[in-house]
Amino acid sequence: MSRSLLCALMALALLAGCSKPKPPEKDRPPEPQATQLRDAIQAPLDKARAADENARKAADQQRAAIDAAESGNGD
Image (cartoon, rainbow, N blue to C red; front, top):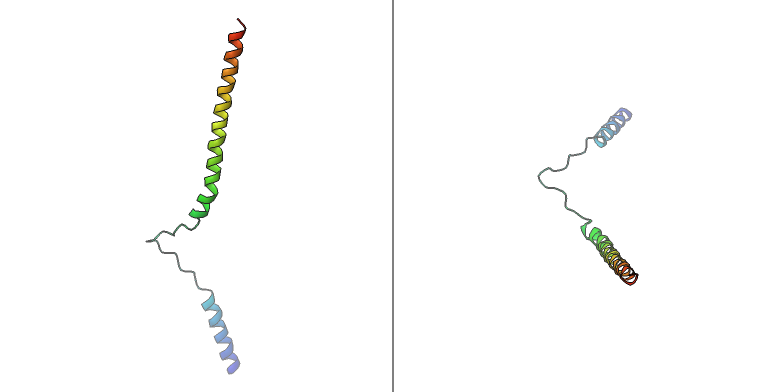
């Protein structure tokens, strides 16, 4: 009898472990947790993009100045 009782208890324990997980609460959205890390990574990238854009503009202005000087001296 104890053997059948043991089997029944083990079956109950296994069935209890296989219950469905509870769905998340829909009232409250999850709190963002990676925003500080994302911002810390994104800030230097944004700064580098801005510096690259400034360097491109300066190069374009210098190229335009050189072209203007060359065309002015050729007359």
